[in-house]
Every structure is written in structure tokens, then in C-alpha cells.
Amino acid sequence: MDIDSRINLIKSEPLEEVITEQNLRALLESNEHPKHYIGLEISGMPHIGHILVAGKKINDLDKAGVKTQVLLADWHTVANNKLGGDWSRIKKASEFYRELFNFFCPNTEVILGSDLYRDNNEYWKLVVQIASRTTMARATRTLIIQGRSEKDTLHVSQYIYPIMQVADISALGVDIPHAGMDQRRVHVLAKETFEDLKMKRIVPIHHHLIPSLKEPPTIDKDAAKEEIVAAMKMSKSKPGSAIPIIASNEEINSIIKSAWCPEGMIGENPVLQLCRYIIFPLSGELKIEREGKYGGDITYNSYKELESDFANKKLHPSDLKISSSRALDSIMQPLAKKFSHRKEEIAALFS
Image (cartoon, rainbow, N blue to C red; front, top):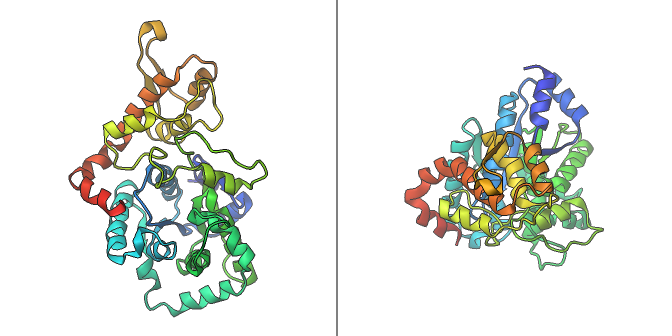
């Protein structure tokens, strides 16, 4: 695969940003197999955004010749006071995350934070170096990566969190740090800190985050893009906001049936975004089954066709929801089947 083809594959949806394409090109020209990583806090039941959206981009990177890595950030889970700080519970939850990524992204290396940090003095030296170059104000601005805001009552550990995230990039030898758009600020911090310390140049990339399936909140029009994305994204902690990765057919139907999907509305419509960023990339089409008096059956082979008909009210939200539920169930069925015998045990880990 030539350089242009590799860049186009890396930039394909759901990717939203590369910092910068020029730097990405230079990296691929100098390094045949650069290293990537994405880190995940083990803070709740994974949803379709974690595995299907982020996982699709991981698989794109793999096809483009990039060595991919997933860091299961168990120490970050404790730092952010998630899962009660119970190490036994976090370990079991981490193993579930590992199984999910091994299944959906079979060529990626899955690493546990505890293993990376163990007996690693160089890592902790770097944490102190980064901390000494980061003001409290800047650390505070990165809090959205933890689902926090400046208004929350915070512990010192939550300020250490982004510092460790920057150090993770170096410790793993990463060229391409990857995350959702809500984590852009910490990657910019990493890029600038590494330049200051005369360390490796990195090329951060950020994928699109599917919004919550609930009606969007009112957001300050002057808020930064990262803050808007964080406020609107799917959330593991808000029932009905996201679809759990091992949801049953009944659960998928119920969640999408109640999803926010105003007739004819395109912007930030979460059901349409499920189609754009999951269904079409992974299935290639969307079949609509309906009675003849409502237009009859139709198969959309591109998202643009679907969006156009929905915008022109040729496709009703109810028909879109029913068909999207069916398509998602088909995509998720292998995962649901794999974990069906352990579903109650897994759910208990995150309750």
C-alpha cells in the first residue's frame, strides 16, 4: 500500500482530526510500522462507541501497517475514583475489556497499565518531569478526559491523571496517540511537552464521538469544541445514553426506540450517527422494511442517500429506528453470543 493510500485509510471515518497530516506523511515516510496506542479507563460497561467506533479505527490503522496497542488504564481508574477503587474488581473488569478487544481487534496488543508501571523508575521520573512543566490551570483544562469539570470537587489524584496519560505515550514508545475528540487537550499537552523535552515527535489523531441517544443538553455557545463533545457524547453512567456492547436484541430495540430522532433533523441526530459511523462502515448498507403505503422496502447503499431521504422526510424516524436496531443487532450478535453465558457476572462488575 502506497503512502497516500495509507494516509487516506487512517483519515477515513470515524477519524475527525490528525495533528497534522503533514506530520503523519513524514512519519510514514520515515517509519514503515509506527506505533499507535489508545488508552481506556476501566470505569464502566463498555458501549458501542468504545469497541465498534474506536475499534474500527484501530483496525484501519492495522491495515495501514501501524503497530496498534490498547492500554487498559487500571491505575487511571483508581485515580479517577471509579469502580470504588477496588483493585480486585478493576482487574476482573480489565480482563473483560481485554477479551473484547482481542475479539474485535485481533491484531492489536492489549497492555495493562499495572504491567507497564511495575518496577519502572523511568516512567515515574518522566511523570515528575511532565508535572514540573504543567501548570495547575492547564491540568484543570484537561479534566474533561475524566468526565469532570472545573466545578467538581476534585482529588489530587485527578490532577495526576493527565500527567500519567502523557507519560504513557512515551513509556509505550508511541508515534500516534489516539483518542476521542474529548481528549484532544491532553494530546496537545503531550505534543508540546515532548517538544520541550526534546523527545520523539508525535502525531495525535482523534476519532468522532457519537452523541448520547438522549436529547442533547443546552450547552454554552462559547464553550470549546472539546467541552461540547464531552457534554454530548454517549455515557456509560447515563441509562439510555449508550448501547452496552453486549446488549441483547431486546435491549437494543428498547434503547433505540426511545432515542432522540426528530423527523427531518440531520444535525447531531444520534440515530443517523449510528448509521454513519457504525452501520455503513461495518455492514455497507441499511435495509428499510416498510409497508407499500409508506414507500415500500428500500436498501440504502450509502449514508448520503439515507441522510438525504431523512432530511426530505421521505424516511420516517420510526422506520429508521427499527431498521437501525436490526442492523446493529446483526453487527453486535457475535459479541453478545460470546459473552451471553457470563452476562450477569459481567454486569455485576459495573453495577
